[in-house]
Amino acid sequence: MRAVGTQVFCASGPSAVVLMAAAAEAGLLSEAGRRVLLVCDDAPVPEAAPPWDEVPGFARLRARFDAVLSWNEAIRPFHPAAWTPRTEDVPLLERHLRRLWGLGDERVELVLGTPDTPPAQAVARVFTGAPLHVCAGGPADYGPTRGKLDPLIGTRVRQVLHLELIPGLTPALLAEFGTPARVIPAEVFRAVTGEVASAVTGVPEGAALVVGERPSDTAGEEDALHAEMVRTAVGRGHDRVVFAPHPASPSRHAGAVRAEAERLGVDLTVLDTPVPVEALYEGARPALVVGCASAAVFTASALYGLPVARVGTGRLLEGLTPYHHPRRAALVLAEAVRDTAVGVDLRGLLSALAFTMRPQVRPALRTDAERYLAAGAWDRRWFPRRRLTALGLPGGVPRQLVSLARNRAARRAARVVRRAVRG
Image (cartoon, rainbow, N blue to C red; front, side):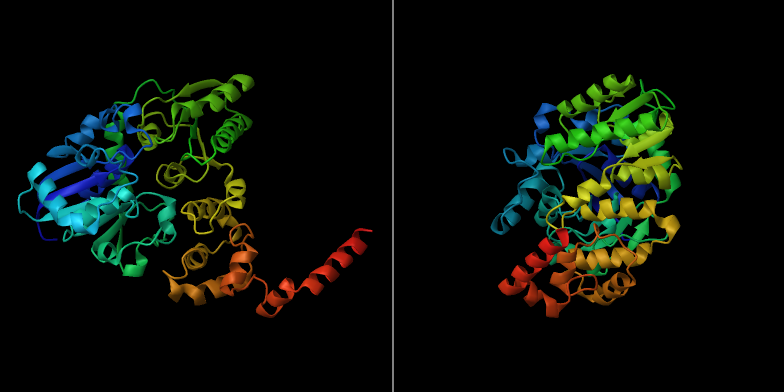
């Protein structure tokens, strides 16, 4: 790779920094005269919590960069999760940021996390000609690219760097652009994580670790899920539980966990700093990791060999709308990985999922989706009949019967038959 003047690493949390640092450590990025970390805190209220770049262990990561900058400060008063620049403002913004950050006219290269989030898209749009590298850290990246990514961004991505969460499988993220995917070696990732782990204290060893999910639209749903995770840990014979809330969750969401732990007589420890969960795997070596479909559950099993319990995937899938919701791929994979012992075709599943979720983005996968669905070895929660019908795929209502379902007389006759059967 050709050397660049400055590499800008745009990270939205400590876990993203660990992943990017591991990619650089493994030699998967170009040599650069200067490496800069751009902190993009897209939490709902960033001011309400200590900056995540000041958490324990972060000093080890910070030392890898020549400077640490704040995207929040650069675009204030706008919020990073809701702002992208207008096209006509881009040239002025680029000149402003180059002057503000001391970039001059040198060649810039960007390293992004999830490319469809507003912070990542905003930075990519401002530095219009910069080559891009994407670090994919979660199971959702095995599904199709989320949202409609501007081709002027997608075509600039040189590679997708990822952890091998599912052995032998490649993330589908940005595959529509023909972007190559390269694996970040597990041993390099663990070495970087180990540096952070050395600064994490006060976490009991050998306890069950409950990994909090990303906040949902309904606080009650999230609380119920976390309480169920605690019950699952206790049901597996554990009386010591560590709860690691999702970094974006307000502290109040630990209330349900505390109440359930007290009811069950469990010794509970709640982490109050947003350290990467993998640092706990290295430092505290939990006896069990309980979660739903977060990246931490996959890394626990694939990279650390820890026993895991997945909770609530089916319930969340049943209520997930719209069908192309970004969490669907992670939830389906969490269920499918659990069932691989009974012969789930994960490669076929991912192709069918990519097509049914984003048929306009991955139209070439229709044949693969038809083949997989016709075999019938899948769960109805993964592929609802209504979605398959709309796309004309096996498992949906045949086309000749769709018009019949809309016929008033046919519906009346069906009601008469149902009443007779019940009678």
